[in-house]
Amino acid sequence: MYNKIILAGNLTRDIEIRYTQGGSAIGNTAIATSRKFKSQTGEQKEEVLFVDLTFFGRTAEIANQYLRKGSKVLVDGRLKLDQWTAQDGTKRSKHSVTVENLQMLGSRDEAQANGGGYNQPTTGDTYAQPAPAYNQPPAPQPQRQQQQASHIPEIDINEDEIPF
Image 1: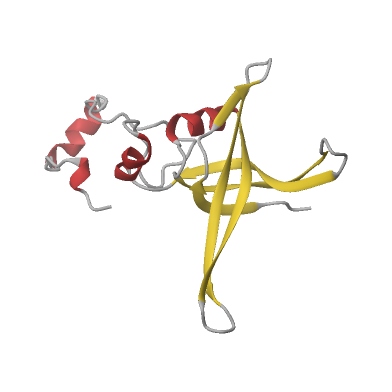
Image 2: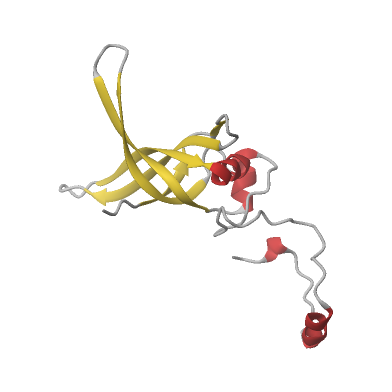
């Protein structure tokens, strides 16, 4: 059978991270998604859905490092049904998502407004890519590539000036 869910929204709280005895990271948070629609009376309405998220391994560590409450993300993973018995003896259940892939959305400007001075990757960067090293000199290129690229003019522009 196939179990796949894709959600885009904003985190409702900072990542809560803990480690297993084996050293594997587990991160927990929740995402808020919304949809706008018109009711039968023509009134504009909004429906908000809150879903718990669980990250594992390196994804949990990266999420903890770069994401804060309010961060925009796109996640995909497996839908899971959690069941337990409450202290009063009633049986409870809820759906949650075990995240398999994480994509960080939003810009660095939004990241600084949400959480301060951490460097969140720019729009479209995924958890599998290392965080970009801003304000560092570019890595040296092999001599052959430098000779081939010598006819390409170098552009002196600040990344913040690029509109996308």
